[in-house]
Image (spheres, rainbow, N blue to C red):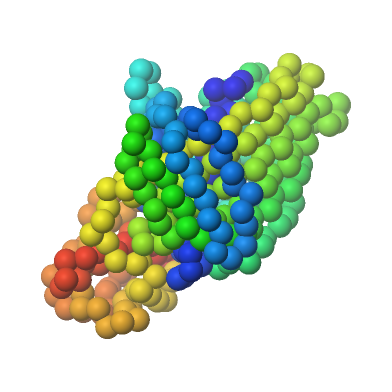
Length: 337
């Protein structure tokens, strides 16, 4: 059960400049190093201008995030899903965890989680995260419900999920034995989930209590670090266990030739036909490239333009990389309706 919980939680883990999270998801093919802290990790700082130091962990594995459109079967099982996040562990026999997300004009919600023997299907009430971008102080809380399955035992669950942008500040990770040094401005999203499980005719046969933190890098506009703590207990299922996972985005430490993504605005977003690029400090854009959630390039231009036609793109989420004449780049996400 412990192994299965490690990635179940991964779904749920700017001083001072933007204090805004543009989207819930990581960039496609983000490479996360699973780390084991060698000293206590203090995540209690909250509010404005917080300071976190997560230095000193040792590596224990790697996860890679990839995205794809849902299959017909997945849409039947998890209605409303617009994209599927797969987190694949590397080394030995790879294991894949699938997380089903719905992203549209009303916001981002979780429709399901499938990992090993554990399945959560939020078929009754989806888990609403928020309408991105989310700014510091944003708080979304609501009921969730659906069905679950674990090792042949099927039942239902009810509960609550709360998503709060509770802090922004400076994150430092000096990991000479792991992934190199990192210091950056981040904004943190905290998600708390509390579920009660039932197996008819028996109610309240177990609980899941979960807290996860996502630290979003301001410059890279991507996840720098994610953390999860999950406690599941059920006498009927024969489990009483707490697991923790710590993951840091290795790619962010390697990306130095970037410009703050918050300096650019894409609108309207979501969009149907055209998307406009607006630079707050009149950056001259040399190249525009758009890739889909599977990492395929669907559009590129070297023309100086502020308006891009996206009418021929399929519905879904896309990533637009903007390169300036100075050779710096930024990546923004948008939704095609």
